[in-house]
Image (cartoon, rainbow, N blue to C red; front, top):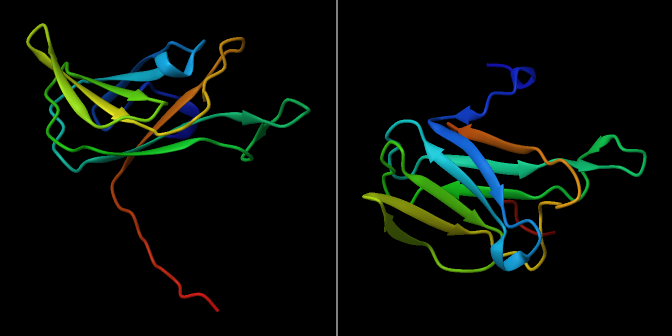
Length: 133
């Protein structure tokens, strides 16, 4: 699947909506599982940012690393809140809603513009720390 095809599902999660864009306390992205997803699966969620001339830019991009804390059953939702908070689940019509928190102090999603949400399923992450000089 190439980037250009722009599907709404990655690794069994479908991008459902952005909600509450007017207020930080209400702002969140909602994802829905299209299949069972196991604990520790990882995803990256990010937005588009634009330069002064309206072209896509990498400056001030917002990136959220989602590492599942428990299994997510088919049709369950994951709510990624922009604000601070602590992971929790709640039962809703027999299915769990999993609440994750980005911990930001400002909104990510503009209410006055069209927005694009990107979701990437991460299969491997390479990390290496380097000592200071």
